[in-house]
Image (cartoon, rainbow, N blue to C red; front, side, top):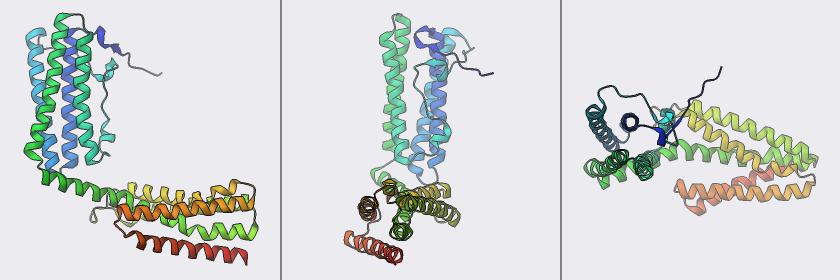
Length: 324
């Protein structure tokens, strides 16, 4: 049997239920900020201090809301949460929060505060009950106060130098976890599959056979590169990040690099497919050069010489072997 949550419309909530919803929302947001702080504490201690302070701010607002509820409605607070109300703003589940980058976490925090304020303001404008309208206005002001408190905490804990340092650390982590393994995979997939694909093409001049060989070589290389990258370093000592993330980045980009010049052989005409495949190879090699130059700070002409020369040699080997 499948059970579903029956959501209520916000306009149907009583003033007590609105206050209870605000209390539970403040509790959830404080928990999210503490999760951010715990996640960032090792690599970004200054930002962790900011989010720990924001969690304390949320706790303070929650306590004031509880006091308001106690004065107006007593000690028993109804159990009502975001998921019980139709159209209420949602928050990311914990397992998604844990995978966000530093900059995304900062942006998520801003969105959290803005969403809450906008929701309360819109609800206040749509309310016809004077007391409810006043209550919603107070909650909107509280959310605006959260934003001011966040700005104050950032000024207190996160100086310009500290933020620049954390941004550089985050960029380095992104390069080590995603760009470097992905680039290695793209290079391997684009270059190493040239020989078997074009050797098969020139040996058989059968586009379907060439396509099958290309897919097999690409997928096989992707699986191999992915597992090799994941197994080579657990990231604990090197600081290169999750081996699973690195393995996926490497494996996917290896497969993509090989499939790029295998897919044209779905075209039945051999020379049309081959010419298109060569154009794709040219694009792939220049994409590798661009990534090396942009993210790895490799001089443009050095990257061009290394990639194009290596690709040309592998292609020539495949063409010679297949043509022989």
